[in-house]
Image 1 (cartoon, rainbow, N blue to C red):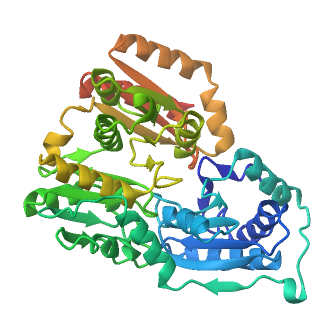
Image 2 (cartoon, rainbow, N blue to C red; image 1 turned 135 degrees about the vertical axis):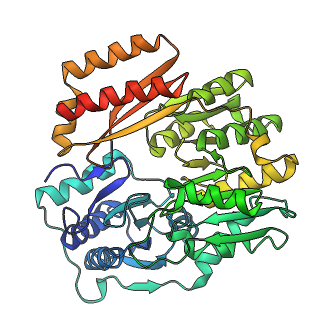
Image 3 (cartoon, rainbow, N blue to C red; image 1 turned 90 degrees about the vertical axis):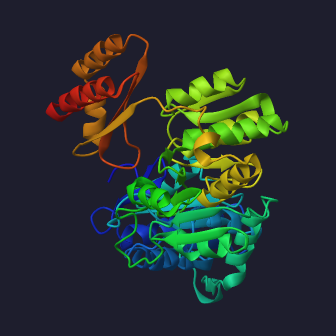
Length: 449
């Protein structure tokens, strides 16, 4: 077995790489590592998304945690950022989320937060991996030292929703929005959240999870239906979450997508105008569109780019004291209110800004233009093959050749996925045809390798 943790926890197809045995061992190891310096009985909050396999993994994780002497706060189906917030609010030692975010239903994952609501450091993940992969025994508790399960009532969920609602002062009155819950975790919270704003007219779709329809043609990775419905229904804005609701994308009144870069651009500009953007800086990733770079330059904002992953974005924000960061895919971190990306929080910030501006959504984001960008995913056999291909001299030469072809009017990024057996090829160019040609030529080469 290779390295367990990727860029966003442990991921895999359930019972084909990620199974109950591994989840049990993760529970044992996490309880030992996360609470080794404490002298009290640890408390670990656990939440999950709506996948059919989430119950299976949850039961195994709880068995491992309780066997190692940890109490478990059972939250049920709830967004990932809610687990992080509730962990801190309840003074828990750690929080665990069972979710594979935007991936198809057959995938699942295990994501761990520390007691401060941040994703685990590489060092702590390494300690957990070492216990599991080396086969080290974790002492099992007996008698009264065995952990127990505390089933949360609605208070924790309502407290989290209250927290989100408190981050805006507007009543959002007079607007009509359409919200896509991706048949995921926000199905349990979104309607309740937007009900806090009775003057806001909200319709909700894809909030009927059945275990296998999460992210299936809906949510932030499949915006087409939402965009069509927003335009046809005369809505002011469409909002789409992913399976665990840590992402949010939007579409304007004309049915055009509003991506994470554009959300970050207008929110950053608003914060700067109010003197609430330290360093006049926002943090993005290398995947951010050139349009965001141009917007920041033209509006006097500093843009810092990290490697892909909201963990990397947050690390840079914490290092420099910045308050806004995110990814084009819709992970937005509003650091004054959250320790991780939160789709519903992002939705409220965008809605409040739109309401205050008096503009249409298309007008609000018009200054942050999106350069033609094409992303092609190439499936590979496994992690070892990803590394072999990335080191290939022919691929490096082909990338250099395509970069010369763009002549400074675009960029190319070829990188291995941190969560799937894929190599991602991203090309930006002045026109769509050039981007498409460059991307497919590189993707076809990767397939031959």
